[in-house]
Image 1: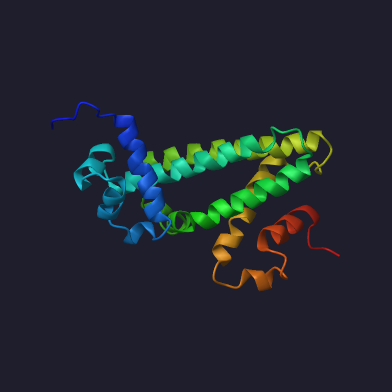
Image 2: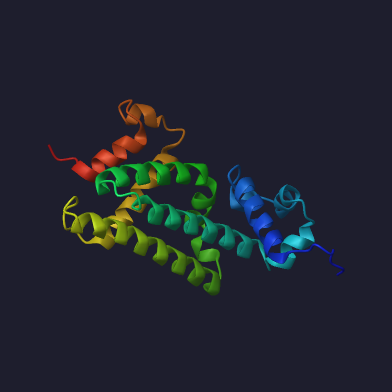
Length: 198
């Protein structure tokens, strides 16, 4: 295949990933034609398969990119010197909005995780582990500053990640009403911080 003078594989790879993320915001992975992604990226369908051996590999790369973004969001959340509780509130809101914006991608993965081949699953597990490690570090810092109770930080990190995806899963189920009119992210934060016991 003849390549143009300004051919940049990394740029093209990024272009395809970004296009896939945008397309998958609108539809589920299983019903998403690669043609739509190629069109959005401004490349031929064959070019997509030049960079990704299968639709599954492309989808895995999209998930890995999104998990990396969540990890960076977590790492950036505690760099400004504010109290950990305030940073946690902002992080929860940002992560919740992120999950909501990408709900089709994450929902598809929850339905079809076993269909991925072992190397792709391992790659995703590594990304999840890095995200959980980052969340655990964030929580652990709050524990050391005596702003959070000394529960196991990895467990709280997992709960945090699970809680932030709730509003996205509730979309279309009148979350505003469920949240008592205060907004679902605030409700999730309050439950996480205060519990439900009277």
